[in-house]
Each structure stands twice: as C-alpha cells, then as structure tokens.
Length: 177
Length: 280
View: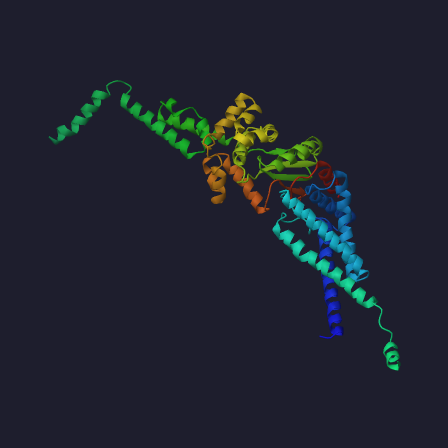
C-alpha cells in the first residue's frame, strides 16, 4: 500500500472513529436530557430529567452536596456540545483530548463505586442497570481506546500535514550541483 | 334367636342411657369438636392459633367450630399490612424496596426519608410506600420483614420500621429483632404481633431458611407463615421492575412511572427533583 493510500485510509478511519465517538456522547446526552414518560419537550421537563440525573450523580457519593446539582446540570449539555464538536472535526486534537479525559473520569468514577461496593445505576445512558464489570469493560476497553485512537490519529495527521515539505527546486538544485 | 339378638343392643344402649344426659355421646362430641377445631387451625393460617387452646373446647362440636371460625375471621379482619406514610392522593408516589438488614437502606431512611416524612409527606406532596425486598445475603433480613409485616397489620409499621433501622447494628449481630419490636409498642400490641408470628419458624436457628427457600422455589416457600405472603407480594412487584439491589426507589408522578433509581440519595437532591416534578 502506498503512502497516499495509507494516509487516505487513515483519514477515513479517523472520520469513522470521531463519528462513532460523537454518537456515544450525543446519545449519552440525549438519554440524560430527554423528558420523563408523559412529559413534553420543554425547558421544565429537561430540568426535571437533569434533576433526576443529579440523583444518580449523588448516589456515587463522590461530590460534595453543593457540587452535585451544578455538575449534573452541566455534564449532559457538555456531552452534547462535545458530540457536535467531534462531528464537525474542527480542532479534533483538542476535542479528542477532552473526550479521552472525560471517559477516563467516567471509568475512574465507576471503578471507584464498584470497588466501594455501591450497588447503584451507572447513569451513563440514563437510568439503567447497576454498575458492574460489563460497564467497566464497555467504557474502559471500548470507549476509552476509541477516544485514544481518535486523539492519536488527529495528532498524527496534523503532524504529517504540518511537516515542512521539501522545496520543489531542491532535487534540481542538487542535480545542478 | 334372631329377634332376641336384635333386641340385645337396644337393651344394652338403654343401660348406659338411662339418665337424661348421655355421657358417651357428649365425650364423643367433645373429641370430635377438638379434632375439628385442630383441623381448622391447621388448615387456616397461623393466625387462627390466636384462639383459645383446643383443650378448652370440651363444649359440643358445633360450639367449637363456631369458635374456630370466629378466631379465623378475627385474623382475616386484620387485612393487609399498611406500610405507607402520607396520603395516597399525593401527586408523587415513592416506592422504596428495601431490606432491613441492608446498611444502605438504613442510610437512606436515616438521612433522607426521615427528613422527607415531616416535610413533603406531611404536606401531602409525597406518598411513601415501603416494599419488602429481603436479600438472601442477609441472615436476618427476611425475619425482620416478617416482624415488620406483622406489626404493620396492627398499625404499628412506622414505629417498628424506625426501631429496626435505629437498632440495625445490634440485631444484625445476634438476630434479637423481637426485643426491639417489643420495645417499639405496648405489651398488648406486641402480644398481637407475636400471635401472628406463630408458625413462622423464627424460633428455630434456621431463620434464614424461608428466604433461601422462597428464592429457590420462586416465592412458594412462605406459605406456612401468615405474613410471608405479603413479603412475597412485594418481592414479586420488585422482580417486575426489576430490583437489582437495595434500596431501589420508584417514583410515580401523576400516574407516570419514572425509571427506577438505586442507592442513597441525599434529601436536598431528592427535594430538588420533587420540586421540579411539582412545577411541571
């Protein structure tokens, strides 16, 4: 495979990777923000869903009480923005780094809860099953490597594209010598 | 000869029954009455044992039967245990599936529900329902649930729930649940609770057996104990959700059941959620 073909496949994989990563963040944000059964899409119903997510955050027993609600109200919109940012591909190195850091934090929080024996819901994609090895494997061995791959890929492509190319006149100059 | 033989028993019968009250039929009726009474006691729930002992039933059979029926209906009149706080017409209903030996359940009760009850429950905003979901990993969880249901049938749910959680560390060590239940009510009330616990097998060391059996047999084990059916009803409701751990809470707002949550949630956060629901 030539360098051009390799570079083209690298770019395609990077696009697929960042779309997949964006989909993860967008679906996670949607699951947390969507109105509860029987409620319409209004500011109030989204606030209710975020308040419900706050209960999930609180059950991790990691944040001080004053920080739970602001964190729960900020995280899903942040995930939503991050999802869109990844979709656009603009500043992919930074969005990749933010995604990796966020997933690392999620895995650490889940592992901590699991180690402390807390039988709580993950809350990653809204209310659901309690934290277990399945969630840790999903986030730690699937989502985290994906985010890392996107970030590393973004840095590699940026380095290659910004590397100083040899001047076109150089070979002829050598030849002239 | 034939004629004389047929006459002989009648003559013999007359010999024993010359007095107005024949002794042998009375004894037979008494024995029959006792047997019938015992049969009814066994056939009906353990609560029928609250009736006076069978030895007292030296009356005619009909009287003993009536007495047994009265005792049975008195137990049935207790009805289902009421394990709730507040008014059922409240816009928010919160069902909490818990195990009395579970430390997280105690924390939820002590730190959150205890603050919620005099506030949002008392003001008619929230209707709180306790559901039993004893876990097999806890040695005395099932027995505690039995005591609570027996107490709830005579209207002592709230006092006993508080007593069980307040003294969880103590009874979880040695299984001395009865002591704390007794301390939470008057002696007369405790006697009524005790009468419902007869036949539950808690006197034996194998107090965890019903829970283990109930799980193994899919909830069929508690049939011998009158309060076990209430625990199994709650557990069946929990299995539908499904409850994976305790405490698990299910909140229903204006008929819409929201996804179940689990673990401890602090009162300020829960209150904020209730406020956002009520503002809808």
